[in-house]
Amino acid sequence: MTESPESPAPSKPGPVAESDDLPVPPPHELLAALADALDGTGPAVATTPAGAAARDRARTGTAVILTTSGSTSGVGRPVALGAAALRASATATEARLAGPGQWLLALPTDHVAGLQVLIRSVLAGTTPVAMRPGRFTPAALTAALRAMRSDVPRYLSLVPTQLVRVLADGGTSVDLLRTCAAVLVGGAATAGPVLTAAREAGIPVVTTYGMTETCGGCVYDGVPLDGVDVHLDEDARIHLAGPVLANGYLDDGPDPFVMIDGRRWLRTGDAGAIDAATLTVLGRVDDVLVTGGVNVHPAAVERALAALDAVAEVAVVGVPDVEWGESVTAVVVPRPGAAPPDLTAVRAAVGGGPGAPRALLVQGSLPLRGPGKVDRLALVASAAADLAAGLGERHGGTDPADHEQP
Image (cartoon, rainbow, N blue to C red; front, side, top):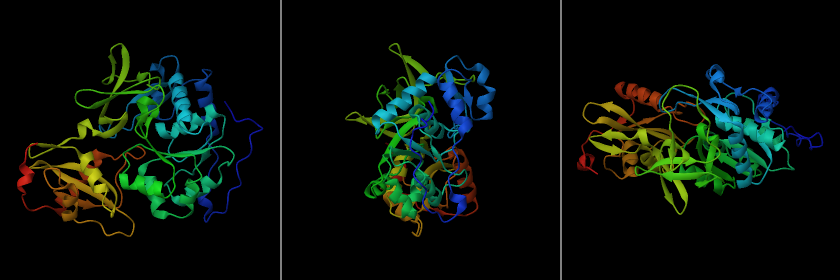
């Protein structure tokens, strides 16, 4: 499970502007612990205190204990991932991509996307290149990409925010991403215009959908990995099955793993649609906003606003409101150098109706909980405070369409 001594050395890094951007050595101790856990000779690896505290509850065969991000509930939960499930995930990923290769670590290892980079590296017998911890910058990515081998496929995983920064920077980081066999993008929904821009730039982006409970991404570009099945119930809620499912949670919280016709499925919190065997994730089931008695799916509003040229990132939340129950509020991060849209343009982009935002806030960034996941609880609180302080724009009129029932 370790790299062969005969493996070629990494290609020589090119010059970089700042020494702080140089890549750091990969986490050898963590790699060794993962290798032992995956072949059953060592204890389960826990990368967070909560995971370590739950280790004695893990059943035999557990290789990794991760804590979920808690991006919706605000509370993470320890999840036991079995060695067989992690192997199945890595094998299916290699089969979908260009086979075993070298990975670049650009995400924290206390979340599944970052830890999977190490697990795939262990199972492929290659040594990953690790970016320096801290704020992600295109310069640091450039240095890490230059340190990668050129004789095997190159891979990395990014969250949408990182991809947005790379595209805004342009230049060498984009050029080097073109040399990768695949750039996985997940952790949160990626705006359509961002994906279009990346692909037009020649970056081989692959969107991923999955979660800690599925050992990371298990649906690539809308198509399940080998062995993974997707089922939608009558409410369009996504269910996932296959060898990549976690052993379960190591706490006493609710259990979303269910048996359907004798098979174990994960009942996710996401709604979806399937067209020609391709899954589209519509958004969180429990993120539905109720404004004026009408249900609004924030993901649909976010997709419309993300199409605006001036918008780099956007999140839509419901701020408590005496009249509306929840006031649909758009929080926008503008593209560098672009003038942010005003509320009139934002409402027009949605096409009016109850989903049209009644308030707009412009910020430099969105609060995150876990890599790439918007902390909606924090965003609601901050948006409410900003609006109460008179910041942003509010819609003062009343459109007849605001009161239309679906």
